Image (cartoon, rainbow, N blue to C red; front, side, top):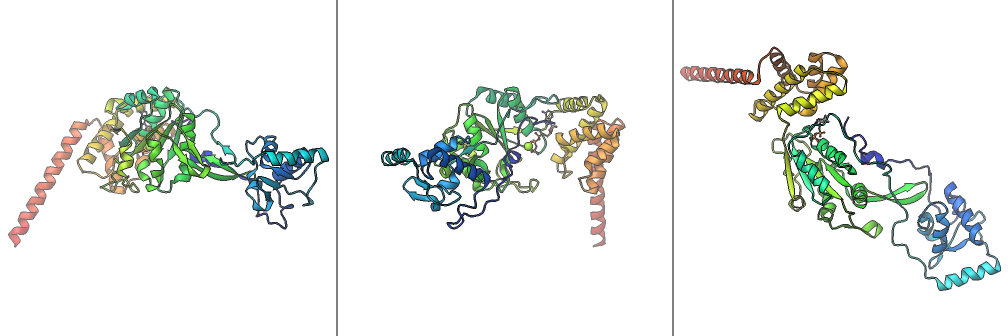
Length: 435
Ligand SMILES: Nc1ncnc2c1ncn2[C@@H]1O[C@H](COP(=O)(O)OP(=O)(O)OP(=O)(O)O)[C@@H](O)[C@H]1O
Ligand SMILES: [Mg+2]
């Protein structure tokens, strides 16, 4: 529902290559060209009247096909190189085609005079980001907690990296998305995993239409656009994210693979979200989270601790969610929030291992709009917990539904706990009598 308009970089990277290219050897170099390459060769030979061309000519010819640089499939292949900055493009016959007398002089003199252009930048820098990458506003969104501060940071357009930590499903990612939506700020979200590396972040060479092209990664793309880079779930990363170190200082980065220094455009900023504070998860709740490098964490000037919304705010979120499906049931929303509140308190007291997040409450509301049954919605959305937990959650809801307040239920729980301790003590003293 949220994040509309915000492109997920993983999907944006995907493209299909039409090329079934094999290695071009000296013997068959003239016959193994794909259609795009053949078209280029025909055009270039026709244009210059020869198949021995300088880098400058190759580059110029390639502009006819909408490319900025000389074709890399050609200039990177040693088989085609016949001199410094000079290449023999593979024609059908494989023979050298001579230019006309006048043209020959021109080519030769230009060969003598012109120093070959050594292309130190990547062949083609392609961007897979097209169109609008400003996230859309979501009507169900309700501002709470650190959101106003986050919004101010986004609005300031300053480079000021923010680390947001908090339990799962309490609106960290949603908040960043909406802060960008409200400020009409471009945002690129990267879902970090243990596998995320420099290639995923900064970019890499990809095969596209038979050409090896450089494709900017999301980080470079965000820097060049002055967009907000959302590093989601940063604590799942390995130490491979250390390549972001200079970027987190706002000073730009040298991308060694394309021999280019990329400076961030005004407005570029980084927000990272995580379930932990980058110190790992002691209770094992967040499997896969890693201890992040201290120096890396040091580069975030501020950290926001995101809590679950207050009951009032959460109720509003649920009411809005229900309204977006054209329904109203304030009472149900209120009861769900009370139910989640009791479970959270018990969770923080160590009485239960699972928690009901804002996300899960929204899921219940959505299930309710589909199935039209409150109990069914709660059951299907709590099925993911083990049987004991699920049954106790469902039973607890029936109490809330019958009108019990959070205080009454908490009192009931305390009494039950005291009773069970007393019976434990009784049985212990019985045991000592036996001894
Ligand atoms: N302020 C809010 N207003 C409206 N809905 C919200 C708000 N915060 C959270 N939600 C609801 O909770 C869902 C989960 O939020 P979000 O994905 O931002 O959680 P998160 O904190 O990033 O979780 P995780 O740590 O698992 O990534 C949202 O999809 C939305 O439905
Ligand atoms: Mg998230």
